[in-house]
Amino acid sequence: MRLPILIYLAYVFIGHLSSFNFKSILYPLTVGMYELGYFTFSWMGEFIGVLGAVVFQLGTPIVAIFTCYFLGDFFALFFSFGWLSTSLFLIARYVTDAYAAGLPLIGPFSERNIVRDWNYFLIQAGLLPHARFIAVISKIMACAAMLICLIGGAWFLRQAKKNSLKAEG
Image (tube, rainbow, N blue to C red; front, top):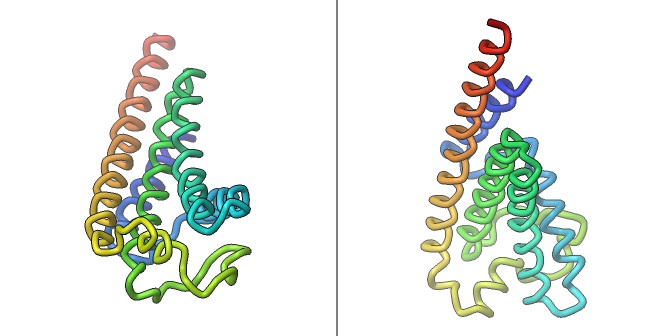
């Protein structure tokens, strides 16, 4: 049952590399974590709200990675790296869009302001001139996380197959 998941994640990786607007089944979960973070921290102001949203968006799969490691569920650990990758690809998309503001707003609180979250956040942090660089770094990290997912997941499946053959023979 795990092989189809790994194949799907390879498809997701190719989709993200080939299309700026690619969305996988992890997209709603990732956006949901972003919006939950924004909702949780929005009472502290727009800047902290957006920062909290990013912390939730990236922190949730990172917490899942550590949790799966400590539980010894290594396939889920590698899957969590795939989830982290999709989250980083999404960040790269919206950081890239910080100048043009051409992407549609998402989530239940998307009409909360005229200035878009990433545009506002990068301006306030003094990072808007570096948006392209931040997007490239995010994409590189996304690729690294997905490669960990795919290579680690393939290794895990190979080890599981070897162990099952030893148990049978």
